[in-house]
Length: 428
Ligand SMILES: Cc1ncc(COP(=O)(O)O)c(C=O)c1O
Image 1 (cartoon, protein in one colour):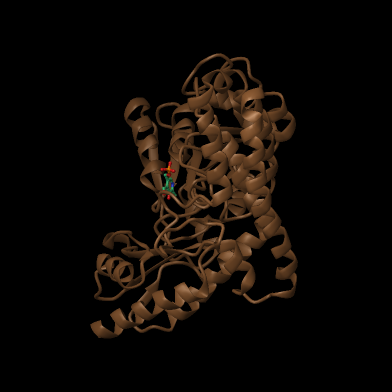
Image 2: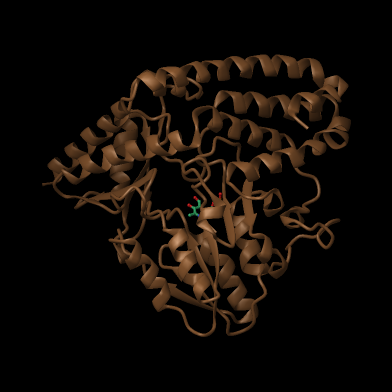
């Protein structure tokens, strides 16, 4: 069912849906005609990306260069979300009698978006929920071992610690450098930690401390040879990378589409490979947990905020109007520009690999002798640029982290770099 057919089936919402549809159609028309211009404009900046930026609603020239925690919602997604949330005020009956029917269509689109089969995806609430599902739902016995990298986010550590406290599983650490030098160095670190009791590797795909993109495909090749499952935490991946479940081959893969993916907070993406579904217990049960023959049985959560599903659909549509490959290329081009210039500044150490296979939109760095908090406050006050502090001294990751999403331009990066140069020189 497409959205038009769906909407025609419900009376009260149909008229206001028409105005929503007209507003968003003009936004997409402008993106489509821009696609033609892009073909003629192959500069990394230029008219195309300036026009894309206009679809975002930032106030007071805010330059949002932290897509961790939450990122922005572009206008068509905002329009769609507010349109559907209003239905609960105007006609709550439609909220339960009509809106839920559309969720299957969104799941299908989500599956297509990440190159998975429809019965392998579920819409959860966030990455933390997906990681808890993996840690508590997988069938593990006391003494079984789970390997985590030394750079996991708390949401990738605490669920396993809880499982260890409850069931006696053992957590083993594989060290990651900041930055690692090669795919081989990363994969070997995990392989060296394997013992006959290892059952799972749970690892960030997008490492929050350093911006490393862990080579999940190569890691899975190695892990699967040892009969070990891989859980990938790609909290930042949806919307940053053109994700392909078939080629990455993780067993469980989770993301939060409200960081880089233009969706509102409260939506999580869960992928569970078909053959693995029977090895995973749901954590929350309502009708369907034992009968649904798909990953949907991991989201029998009772009532949900269904407008989020419509917003997710719109967020994917927004990405598709630009193109997922083009988005990834743009993000990497901006990050490459930033890193090249950071390397040229004395006293600056970049914690993120240069290789665009091992990095994407997150760049972490430090300035020797300068408090990361001072860098964050300085660029916010001087240029209204939002970045964040990150890391810890103990493993050389203490510094700041910068995102380079599609709505940022070279000019903003240049302003950030001017501040970094100033702070590094002032210190020396
Ligand atoms: C790598 C990583 N994993 C997990 C999370 C937790 O994400 P959420 O709060 O969306 O569940 C984050 C948050 O930024 C993250 O960076």
